[in-house]
Image (cartoon, rainbow, N blue to C red; front, side, top):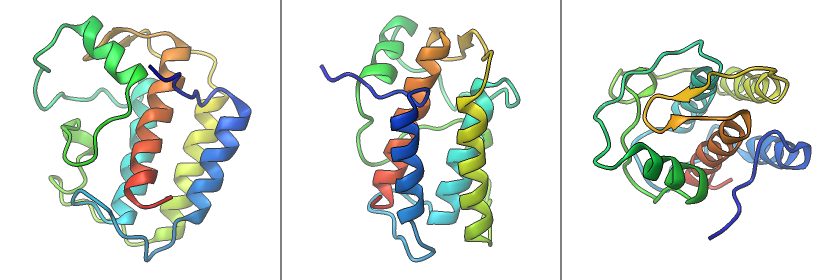
Length: 153
């Protein structure tokens, strides 16, 4: 089992910010249906879940106990290809198509900076149960890493 990186680690945060800077308006998805602008918006919005700003609606309840889902979310890189997302951050399903690449890129970097300075995050993940600040740092790294890899960064 690999040790998942954590966005509360400054070195990891800088690595992710550097990878975001490698994206261009021409970055193509290696899997999935989102374009790069949608991917940037999706990643930014996901940070609003851990702070409690966004209360997401699960598309469906996963067919496993919360403790097992928590283990997978925090310790396993998600597979390439289609995964269920929360309805509110489903860019394609909601026909959200941001036009301005640089704005979306700036917003994502700001979301990461804000997250990394957070004192308190919500104590529970809707699908995976109790979540510590550290757990959110790992989950948000894992999610952002997944989508940066999707766009080749």
